[in-house]
Image 1 (cartoon, rainbow, N blue to C red):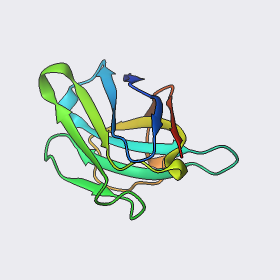
Image 2: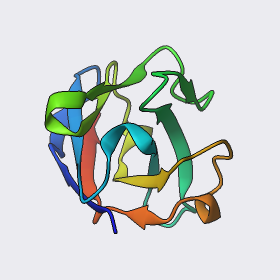
Image 3: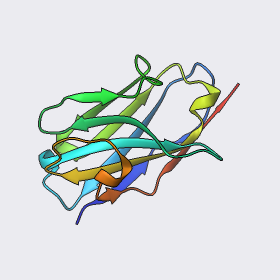
Length: 124
């Protein structure tokens, strides 16, 4: 069983940066694939980024490429989502999701564990 806890959401202005974290408990951290999803009000959940903890490789959605990055802090079993040049359309609840021994796939059904989500609001 893996327990995920996000932190770091908040209210920022367009053009600002924000870092959101996802701490993982109850698993060997380097076995995990960890993905970030977001869901804006009235919209479907959207894939944002994914990282293979053991390999360090990442993949991102076109909508955030060049602005958002993800990284790991192995010592703290934490994955960070660094969001730069934020836009009002980035406003959403951001959730991390994890799967042990992840080998591929980014769809929501792939992921076994989900965090509670953290709200990011970007004002114009």
